Image (tube, rainbow, N blue to C red; front, side, top):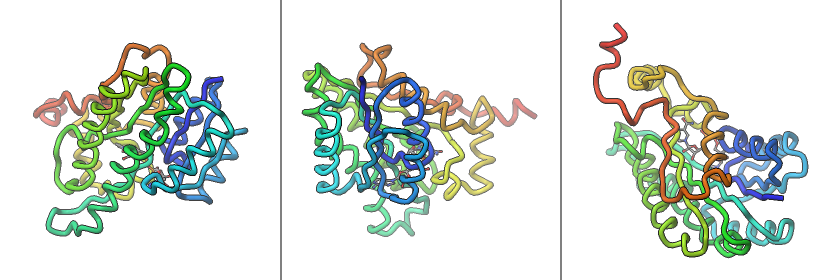
Length: 249
Ligand SMILES: NC(=O)c1ccc[n+]([C@@H]2O[C@H](COP(=O)([O-])OP(=O)(O)OC[C@H]3O[C@@H](n4cnc5c(N)ncnc54)[C@H](O)[C@@H]3O)[C@@H](O)[C@H]2O)c1
């Protein structure tokens, strides 16, 4: 049976991804630093391996590797989804706020993929999907830490794809457009929501399941010759220049 570990799976896009894989017959492990929320998610995922831990802490990553090795003895898919958002002007972004975002969004996927490389390589090569963001594709106001962390994660994805391809491991990214999760709703003001509608040809937010479908495609054998790509699941945001509001009016 295929096995996958999804980080940040207590809710939102990570939980939808884990549920999609579970329904497709995969064995799943879910990791999150929010223990109570993770316990609630586990009720929706019978037989999942539940790991409470922080992806940015080397000791937690080592413990996760030990737990997955003991329970599954293999790993076919790793989804580096855990992320934090903190929007603010450059002048108000303290070093602590900057580091907090970088720790989870960038250090986490580096540590997790490095920690699980041997297990992913053991059975001929698994797949990694890093969750970036459209904020890493195009710059915008208030996202100095978040956008930079996601652009760096996209480059980390390419570095990992180039080097780990030797081991048969594929590494891709998914760059979601806006989805109304707890993370997004904490930082999307009414003005930001309106601005997204103005910038999206599909003129709406995406759903957790629409992002999970892209992630789970890249994990699957259907994507067996795809590596080093960032797939934007974004309602057309990346493709769009100026003019949509004028077209609509
Ligand atoms: N929602 C959006 O609009 C959107 C858009 C683009 C990208 N993303 C990205 O998608 C991913 C999932 O976001 P979401 O919207 O589902 O958010 P969410 O806040 O609903 O879920 C994120 C989960 O990650 C966990 N987490 C955070 N830091 C962690 C850490 N250091 N260790 C372990 N767990 C940690 C949280 O506890 C939470 O359960 C994130 O990487 C986010 O940046 C989201």
